[in-house]
Image (cartoon, rainbow, N blue to C red; front, top):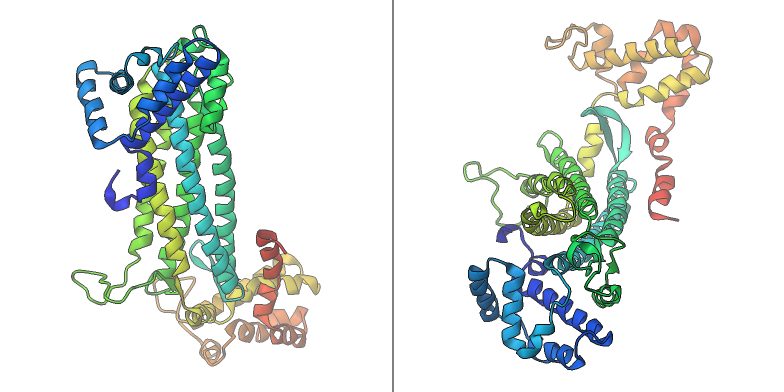
Length: 463
């Protein structure tokens, strides 16, 4: 975990103090269950709580570390230090249990704690996306496919689309959190030979987990693989939204940009720069989170009833993936909430190429008025290419200045060049009265393209 990309609450989940506290509660709750079954004296269970239930201070943690240098076993080191606190009754601690009972159950608790924070992060991001979607619901901009002008959409639909994506992410994370929240207190190789299953049920209830239906000596790692895979998908969505913002912030687009604070500097060399540093950072952080997915998948395969090939992996990917995603979601929520949008630039881009965004609208109009689809497509495409040429772009000779005729030059005087060329097209005049076409273009084109926006919003946000 790097402090630069860590937030305190998530980082604290993976600190030794929290880990050892969870270990203690597992052992202490197990003692209560064993005492209730008559396996150990009730006084011993009380002693564990009374003398061992103390904060895991830096001094206690240092003592555990010191013992581990000799034992080379972290759980034994923990139990030895606990015995120093509890005294003789500590001999009843860890009855019938194996280290994995403690380690795997603890990891389940930590992952559910992390999951809860990530769910709260997603809620903040969803709130920001919903607010911005409604603010910009009818703010018209050009849609792009393959990076090229397509048809009009609205900025609100962009925000709504990402809201729907992260709402799906939240549902997936809820399911993944539930799937990983299992407890195993089943002893060596998971047979309960030296433990009553009631102990597992009691500990699970106390820790907010569910008993693992069947474990070996470890909780099955397909559960963890699903959890980290879900984090990876959420990270992919983070990058998806971050990339959209980065493209919209490009100088030649500038339809939106990250908030640039007073006194902020964009470049050490170029004082004019306003760079999309936050969303670029998010793109990188998303890669880090996704890097945990493949190792988590490979952890599913373990030898027989247990090996520890998964252990070293999880000690790294669990803190790193959750801490990084927590930071990324919080940062993204801030970016969305303070994103600066430029509606005038959106309209300028929309109107920059002579109305060619209405090409499909004209195509459908022709087919609905008796023109065959192939003929209609040829007519509209031919005139759309003339629009490009009137801007000095020759579709037939890319990279060369277009050779314009008088009609091309005359088109430059018209706002809607597509209509101008269509109205002058003799092939179109043969199949359609130009007056009909004129009436089409007299209608509000933007209203046509945005007439279903409210219906889409109702699908995403409800009535």
